[in-house]
Amino acid sequence: MKLLRCAAMLVAALATLGAMLSAAAAETRTVRDSAGREVQVPAHVARIFAAGPPAAVLLYTLAPDKLVGWPRDLGADAKAMLPARYAGLPVVGRLTGHEASAGAAAIAAAHPDLIVDVGDVEPEYSELADRIQAQSGIPYVLIDGSLAKTGATYRMLGDIVGEPARAAELADESDRLLAEAKAAAGSGGQLRVYYGRGKDGLETGLGGSINVEFLGAAGLANVAAAAGDGELKKVTLDQVAGWNPDVIVTLDPGFFDALSTDPRWKGVNAVRDRRVYLAPNAPFGWIDSPPGVNRLLGVRWVAGQLYPQALPGDLRALTRDFYARYYQVDLSDTQLDQLLDTAMRKLP
Image (cartoon, rainbow, N blue to C red; front, side, top):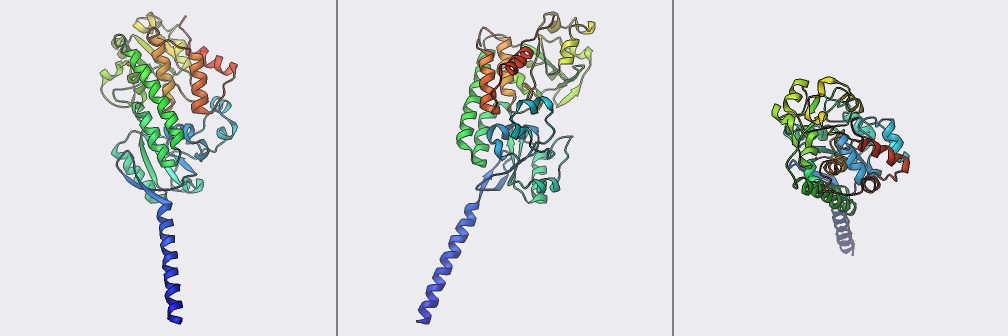
C-alpha cells in the first residue's frame, strides 16, 4: 500500500511539475524582430518602454495604456492637445540618438515588460538592443520604422504586444493613406522639393535620410539628395539656390515667415511662385519631428496640396478622423481651425 501511495504521489508530482513547466513556457514566446534577432518576449505585455520618440508615437497610437512614459518632454502644445492621462505620463528618457539620456537604471525604475525601438534597422541599433537587453534583463525588440512599411510595422508590433485587432485597423488605414498619395503623385511630373528645418531653414535631410521619407511617399524628389546620402546636415543658401526647388516644405513658422521678407530667397523658384508650405506640428509634426507614424497625415496633406486635381478631399474631415483614430483626440472646432490655418497658409 505504501508503495502504491508513493507511486501515486510521484505521478501527481510529475503531473504538477509538467503543468508548471507548460505554464512557464507559455509565459514567454520567441519573436523575430526586424533586425532578425530572436527575442523572448512575455506572452502578456502590460508595460512598454519606448527607446525613442518614433517608438513612443507608434506605441501611443497602438496601445497608449501600455506606454510607461515619454522619451522627452512633449512641450506645452502637445500636452494641451492630448488626453490628460497620457499627456501626464512621466519623462523616462531615451535610449537612442544624440540625446540619449536613459540607461539600465532608468529602465529598471520604469518596470517595463518590454523595450521597443522603431526606426532604422542598422547594425548599430541591433548592437544597442543587445547591450541594453543584457544590462537590464528586459527583452528589447527593434522594428523597422520605414514610412512605406507602416502597415507591416503596425501588424508586427500589434502581434508582439497583444493588440492585433487595433493594429490591423491602423495598418489598413495607413496603407490607404499612403496608397492615395502615391496614386496622386503618379498623375503628373515629379516635383523637386526642399525640406527646410530650423529658423533659418538651412538644415535638411540628405538622400536616404529618414527625416525626408515623407517626400518620397508623396512622390516628390528631394533636391538635397544632390549633396549625397546621409542624415540631417546644415547646408548653405547658395546650395539651395543652386538646387532651385519647385516647392519648399517646413515645420518652422519662423522660417516660413522669413521667406516672404528675406531678399536672398527671392530668386528661388519655390519662393517666387509662392509654393511654400508650412506643416502643423501638434501634438506631433505632420511631416517629421519625430520621423514616425505621425507623418502619415502629412504625406496625405502635402500630396493634396500639390496634386489637388488628382487628390480632392475634405482636409477638415480627414484631419478630424486622423486625430480621433490615431491620437484618441476629438478635436474641437477651435483646435481644428488652428491646425488648418497653419496647413493652408500661403506666402503673401
